[in-house]
Length: 150
Image (cartoon, rainbow, N blue to C red):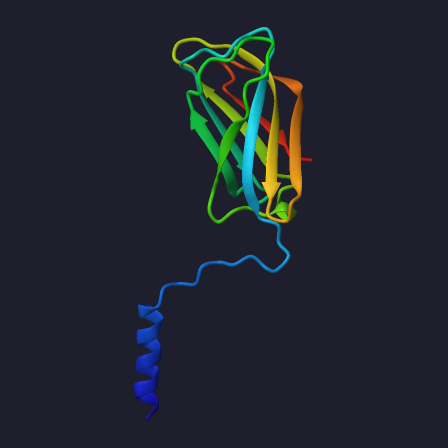
């Protein structure tokens, strides 16, 4: 009699999809994010590809942006650019100690000095604003800039 029950259990195990992970009650999940750049004495060239990766302290990517995004004037703020939230979304408790990485891939040569401000909004209404005050300089020799979220 136990044998048919085991067969049924095995059939259900393979027939039912895996459950979707659900965050524990009270967990604040990332809902949206934006970034803006302030260029310093160098404009971002029109064709330069910008990639922004936001990772939590475990290294899991929670938001991403990649694109040409047009040219930004020197000594000016760009418009707010939406970040793509990755599924499953990251949670606020694991954000601190994570990183924001900015990478450029120029077509030809592009040296770019900037600061940036990232706005992350969570499901409980809280926001995390990360402002990179230190001047970041990216060029052909150094294409990445990483900031630790504190």
